[in-house]
Length: 178
Length: 60
Image (cartoon, rainbow over the protein chains, first blue to last red):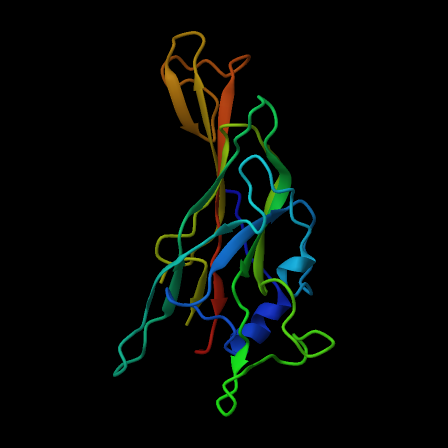
């Protein structure tokens, strides 16, 4: 069976460690964007990704992958893993012509689309950002922080009526914190 | 918890020119009714990527 293993952006580790991903249904919005250029693990934000052209059913920034639930284990026993689920998203090519569609693309990049706050300083109530994630002037970089990417293995071009669905496992979702 | 691996699937969708059967078949382009392989028929592809979960661990 062909598999689609995750590839980690290094930034994701920094963001997890600093609590920059607000993974709840009331938190950040996560999304998948499509690209035909191989990402590198040193990419920081979505602006480091060469996204495919927004047309024929594909929107700039990709599509949001809503978090559907997370579960905590018992606080009195060894906790079960905290599991964050991602909803299924589908890109559907549509066009007024019979041939124009979406792509070509090969990679799907998962990122935090709405992380614009940073870490809240408990004293000043202002957002701050770790220096190695910040811009040269200390501010939040443009775009959402990257988490992981998946390689389809070959270029895809969707013609009108065709679809590309990203379907997280029903019980394990996009990522697990255990 | 069982290990979850990602997977890639393609569902092909077409109407068989030999028997008229409408097909939606996973990873195969042979008619489910008569076995004829897709040749000149127009068909649609529906790609599905099931991503392997990223795991962040704090426990050994």
